[in-house]
Every structure is written in structure tokens, then in C-alpha cells.
Length: 240
Image (tube, helix red, strand yellow):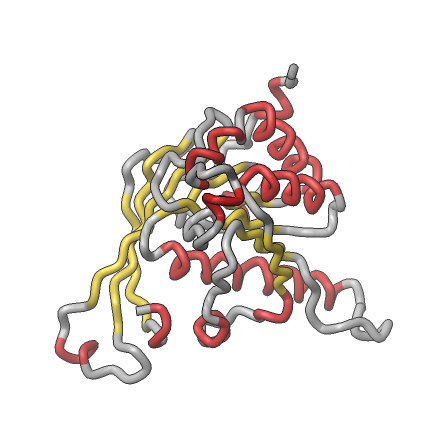
């Protein structure tokens, strides 16, 4: 498959800011892995939903009788383990404004992502490969889902990338290990880690206590590679 260079080139973004924002992620493919992936993902979900709400308000959707929120996020999973909705809500995420899609294997997930991006109606598409459910290996011919992800080659990623560019959307893949989504067209690879805060005050905090979430840039085509970003968060019970 032939691609024009301008279709694959990512505009240079400032390297000093937080690496997982919609402004940085839109129009490209990002891979996020690590045990704290959901923690840092909530920040991106809030940003996308707030942006959608502001845009709907600016266009006067409320005056036309439209809903205050809109489904601008599609979460595509290769497993049937939904994220704990109260945790998402406690982190400011409007769960009802997320469309959850279940697919039998990673290749079908990529095909579903392509259809979503072609609609030009979404801002963020999440490909969740992180937690394969029991029984998927038998469905895929006794092949581990991570092995099936190798079928998502540069030809598939190239189509997804062009659609991200065209619709100004972001495509985020959540994987178990960094590099599971292989290919040179992955713009940024991030690893999210988490550890409990050692301060005595944080240990007595209600609603789950505090923890330090760190985000490391494993690969990026702009900015500082291997740079680390840390923030202190209050985690609900289901996330710890």
C-alpha cells in the first residue's frame, strides 16, 4: 500500500507539556501500557468529553433540544471485562457518553476502529487489548491475542492513521506490554506505573488513599524520549 508522506507526517508538538493530551494525541496512533494505564487514561477522557461539551454548547445543541453530552469516545475491547464505572465517574468521566464495543480478536477491533473513524463522528477511539478474557484463545485457534496483534501490520495502521488525520481524531491502543502493537506508524509509546504515596497524611486519606502515577515516554517522534511525568492522584477503591 502506498502512502503520501504528508498523510503520515505528524505536526511537531511542544515537548515540555504532558504527553497524553488530546492536542498531542489527535491525528496519530498512541500506545499506552502498564498497570496504571486506566489512571492516566481518565485524564484524557475528561479532556475529550469537556471539549465535546464546550463544542456542543457553542453550537447551541441545548437550544435545539439536543442532549448535553455526546458520544464522542468509542472504547473497543477484545475482552468482556468492563472498567469499573464508579471509578470512572469518581474521576470525572461521563460513562454514559462512552460507547463500548466488544470484538472477538484484535484484528476485528482494528476493523471496528476503522469504521468509527470513517464516520467522522468521534474524537477518541480506544483499542483495549490489555486484558484478554478466558476463551478468546480457543476462539482464535489456540492463539494468544498478543500473537493475533501481529496481524495488525503497517498496512492496517496506515489506513487508521490516515483516517485519524482526516477526522482529527485520536487513536489510543491499551496493551499489556509496550511494543505489543508493533509498527513504525505508532507515534508515541507510553508506560504508566503506580505506587502508593509514602506520606502519613496520604495514608489516612479516605476513599482509597493516594498514590503517585508516573508516565514514561518510551518512544516518541518528537519531544524527549524516556522523559517521565509524575502526579499525585486519589484513587477510588476499585482502581487500587
